Length: 132
Ligand code: ZN
Image (cartoon, rainbow, N blue to C red):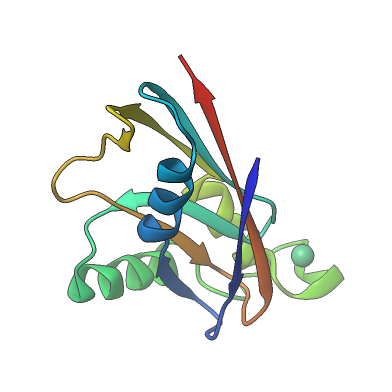
């Protein structure tokens, strides 16, 4: 298992991690398998989509509209970040990508993003490659 450390800068942001995941996959000598990218936090997500600045803003706007801050959530009584946890629930904590001919078999427009929902913080993402 490998790790990617990320220092996020905003409260809510998308951070492209495709290059770092590719480096890890290329450093492991396998032809075929799967790669699991997993975030170890309850207020972050991992998603795959197009790396286009307008779309990245649209995704953040969607999260804001779907799950606004401070709507009377019960968890806000504890640490005032229920919306961050709920956004994480919607986004998911991991993605699995096939490996073919030693590389991530992503579609042309697919990129991997770490999504910060309660930053800025130090974050850690696990990358596990399984041969098969
Ligand atoms: Zn919390």
